[in-house]
Image (cartoon, rainbow, N blue to C red):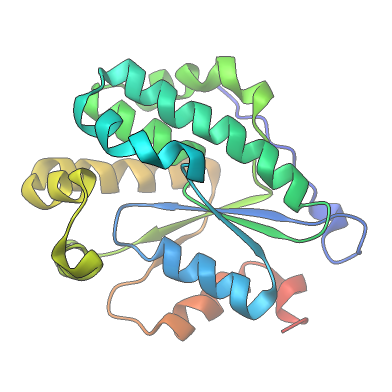
Length: 215
């Protein structure tokens, strides 16, 4: 399967069209920190999934819904996120903290789907979702991931965090799948382990030379 992307690279830096970047990767890799720094330093419009209106039932869905119901909840959030980002792009470059593959990859691992099956699952929705100009996958070593997840939210971990912390096999499979998908689509993978956030930010920006010149 070939993913269809609405690439707009010829417009970057021309003032004619804004860019849309998605940050994907395992829990604890630093997506939120980097996304918010892009907002602060470069003026990106920052958006985190699922959308705000979905969050009141997120815990219930994550802990109680059947697998396909959970998948549809998050995919519906991606569709609404896509529309919100289209509006953002009228005025600003946009950064999305978790997007389509943060729905596809966890579902595929839990349901034991191959990468090909996972991509086929997305086919009915792809015409309803604006795909990013660029996707960056943030990675982190297991020991560092555990430390970050244990410390965040003052130790009050989400059900997703608890699952990752308690299941070594699942933790490894999630990481391997993100890297495999990144390699398939030639996305940059940035290791955030033991690094200062400013250093990571510089590497993220290096993926976009036209942005670097505007810092």
